[in-house]
Length: 166
Image (tube, rainbow, N blue to C red; front, side, top):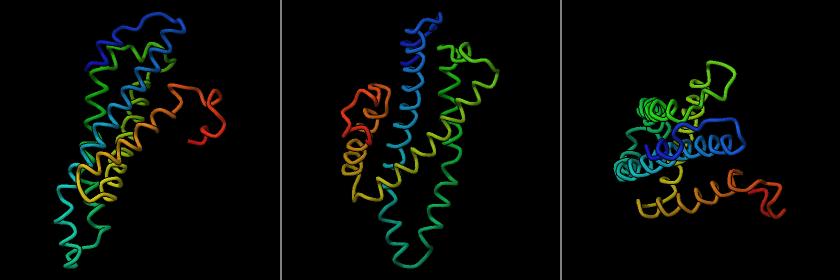
């Protein structure tokens, strides 16, 4: 993991160390989100033609397809954040800044929920477009402003009042 090379052994309790830790956590969550979004976009686009044909022939309903598709994605939602966090957690000592011993599981829960949102978001974007190129472009057009206005790069109080709602 490249983040481990950048955030390896953040020591001390200075303001810079806290900022590095927050940046590391944000990067890790964004990495999990981005990896799973593009994976789900591409996988749905490959199945789109078959799905439309089977829906037209009334083989099953759309609800059944998405329930089974989400059940199939559960191992990926569990393992990808877990493996990522196992690699990075002790290198960039997240646990040293916490008062309890459950920091690993709390942050894993956050990454697990991020992975669920990423896969659902990927399906939504992919379903709104007719091909993989359009899906990737639409995903970038929405992801980048969301990351930019998310509050890590600039505090909401310093933004122009008309942009704060974003």
